[in-house]
Image 1 (spheres, rainbow, N blue to C red):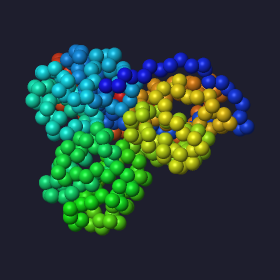
Image 2: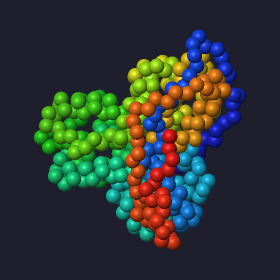
Image 3: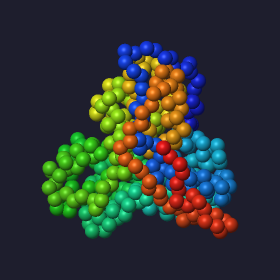
Image 4: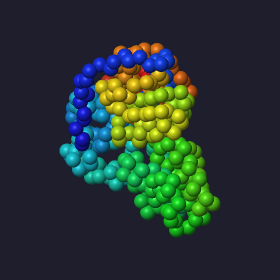
Length: 346
């Protein structure tokens, strides 16, 4: 696994005068979604229950800070299950795994805990059902992303990945009358709909999934940053480079009016030059980002004179998912108060 970056020290940001009033517009919802919360707590509770080490296939969620903290608590992240000692506990990440990975874990007698987001599991079940009915599945997503690999692995002979609207213009299918689209849950809503529009132009009988595959949290964070971006001279998105939904937030901010937008892992990555002439800074975070990282950004921006913070909320989120069945009840037998995977969030 990649070595996590340790935040570097830098000189505090300077409070330099600008023509107007300095302020921060803070997007909400932001940060942890229910699926991420569930997955992170699953690793924490597995460590509490079984002791270190607990192995995790891939990054449990795509955030360098979360992975680093869990490593310090005793989690060991591996690329594949064949790196896990036989009989050990292994957690599957929130992005999901293919049946081949599940079988590989069983072959090594691993004690597997599946922390796949239930919304991803829903897409997996859709893929299985459409493949059983002999549909060709056009999976809108990014080839190589863990979620796409897991979904495609459910029906490899029936799935073709469509990476972009441009690929929709060239993809070929066996039978245009029996084709359906599914999508990676963390994509840009706008780009996904453009891809589907182009697919439908070529394949008028293209069927839709039974429900929207784009994650509610992805949609909510994109809607919020659209509202923030139109008034922002600068947008800062907290999130890691391998977080698809965080990267999309930067793109959406620029598309909807932000004069500049940058993605950072930590507050210390904010550059003084970004703030030159900036009156309004928009701030948000991807769905795998703990709120503590956003608060560090706000503290640094306050040093630069951006202490006036206005939150713009476009939706309320109260969804929680049950933890994997192995972790819902403590060893002593009493009900665990975190069995739903929830914790306080902004």
